[in-house]
Length: 277
Image 1: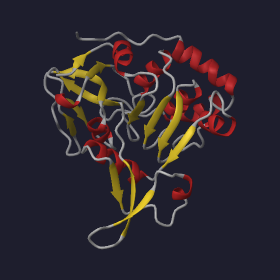
Image 2 (image 1 turned 135 degrees about the horizontal axis):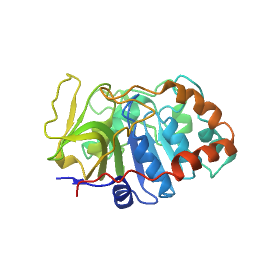
Image 3 (image 1 turned 45 degrees about the horizontal axis):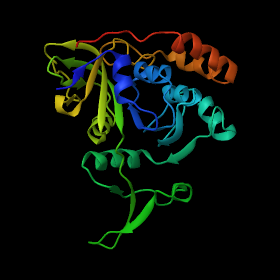
C-alpha cells in the first residue's frame, strides 16, 4: 500500500539529484504543485521526460534543475515558445540542456515498453523524418518475420514518475478521468511513483468510460494536494487558466522577470503540509 505523505516529505524521499523524472499529464492533470516542490528543494542534474513539456518544464529548466530533456513536443500550448527552454538550448542559461527528441508515438511506445520490462520499443515510425539524423537513439531494425524496416528506440524507465489525479481512496488506489495521456504507462514503467490528488475519498466512484484506475501496488506515495494541477485543469474540479498561459509568455521571456516571478510565486511559498501518516 502506498504511503500518504505531505508533499515536501514525498519529494524529499523519492526525487533525487541525477534522477530521470517524468511529470506526465496531457492537456490537464499536469502536476504543477509537485514540480514546484522539486524546484524548491533544489534538485539538480535531472533528466526530465515528458510527451508534451510545457510551462512546468520551462520552470524546472529555467531554475537549473535539468541537464537533459527527453520529449516529443515542447511549447506553451496555444501561445508559442518556451523561452526558458530556448535560452537553455541556445545560450546555455542557466546551464546547457541536452535534447533527445522523439515523436509522440515514440514516447508512448517507449513508456509502454518500459512498463513491460523490455529494453527497447519497436514501432512503425520515424521514416521520412529528420529525427534520426539528430537523435542517435533512433535506430532501424529488420522485422525477422517479414523483412520490413522498423524503428527501435530505448524503452523509458524513469527513476520516478509523478502524476496528478482526481481522487485516491484510503486503500491507495488512484482514479484519473477525462483526457488521459500516458500517465498509466509512465507510472508502470517507473521505479518509484508519486501521485498528487485533488482529494482522498472512501469510494473512487468511477463514472467515466475514459477512467483509468492505478491500483495501490503501482504507487509509492500519495499526496492530497487540492488544486495540484493549476494552472492546467482537473476534469470535474476546475478549468484551465488560459489567461495565465498567455501571461507566461511575457513573464518568461526575460531572465529577470522569470526569476522575480519564480521567487515570489514558487520559492517563497511553502508546500501545504497535508498528509495522512
